[in-house]
Image 1 (cartoon, one colour):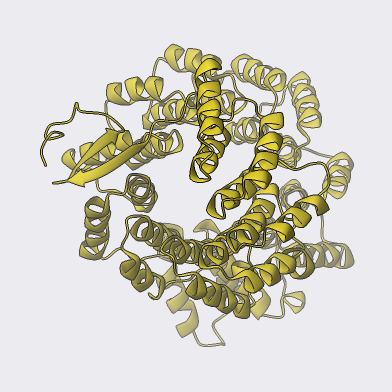
Image 2 (tube, rainbow, N blue to C red):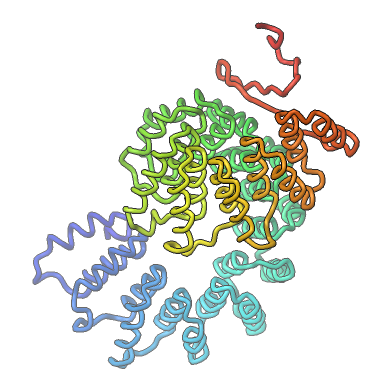
Length: 558
């Protein structure tokens, strides 16, 4: 009784307090079913395995329930063991039991066994067809699923909502999507809100946002998921203006809609708009969840809003929200990028699980603040952890190589670069190679930097030559600078940075005519230098400045 009403703990307590003489297969099976029905799958399987179930008279219903738990937890070994038991004991394969067995194999990716079970069934119900079609769709076999759906319709068997949701989720092509949509309409699901919502998401995911919008506009009834699906589709495609118009029309907003808008703006580099949404969320009394807060912290990082970011951190402490890996990493990134390294370190040392992104963010923060040796030491600590969760990745190596570059740690940099492929099997990208050139060049080892570039072969990009050119400016090497500039302009004739750097190298060497020639070339070829921009937070308001801009209030004050 308790388990049926979701009170699984009470049910467990009653079971555990029962004398052994009173416990039997029925009470044991009831508690297993209660765990499964309340998504407590591990506990269900632990209870099942806790008894010598092979010696008990396990009925078909209990076996079917346990097989469904095996499928959902991908416990293929136990599923196979139960299958063997059924065959050894000669247990009759009812439709319910066969459906559960087939579903378990399909969820575990054993498609051929699942297909054979389906074809060998002497009797099938609608669940049999739906399990087969859903299972193949979830494993990426959409064509076969659609063929079976057509066969199912010809036999007069009705598909259910779950079948269509599985087909839609597994769809990656527009032509398949249209076929699924047509089937849904023909089988009476045209006004089914969950299916329409899933179709909106599908159309936007495969790049047909207009078809998703048409479906959205045609829906006679919508729920909040409908609005969120459409907004998420626009945000995913980068159409933030369209997303904003729909967002403002929403009758009710929730955390998902707000976090979708915030993440969309952050991805599009419009972090100031993301912060506006966050403030609107607070005004409307919506309590931000972890996903929303993580997105807001990302916006604060992009804009350097230390005051706003710190207030978010205080809010987390005030409501007692535990810092998890994602939030901890976002806080470290925010504090480091906003210039508050001490707080970043304090968060990093806090009591939460750190993954590779957390370690990498902290290493990057130390590098950003010029603490190269500390960054290398932290990288070595990360290596000592030795867990798969904290195994350095490509970005980790880029961060620590950058730290070595700015701290002049040439030998450390060499060793770390070599360990990428030797110890971790990570192939260095051109950005890593450019970092090595920068490391050697800044340290004055220009000849070794040139030799390193030569060892890379013909596929050297602007990033690598740009690192060499930057080193030539530091060490005022005109001849090598001209060579690097020539290589850059062969790859990108309109590269403004190469022209400006080479002009400055000439000027610093006193070659004024050559410097003017480079500047004149930029004017003649209309090669524009990027305008410098900066931001400053004043009284909680973000102000943006560009070079030569006098439009801001107080720009003439000294």
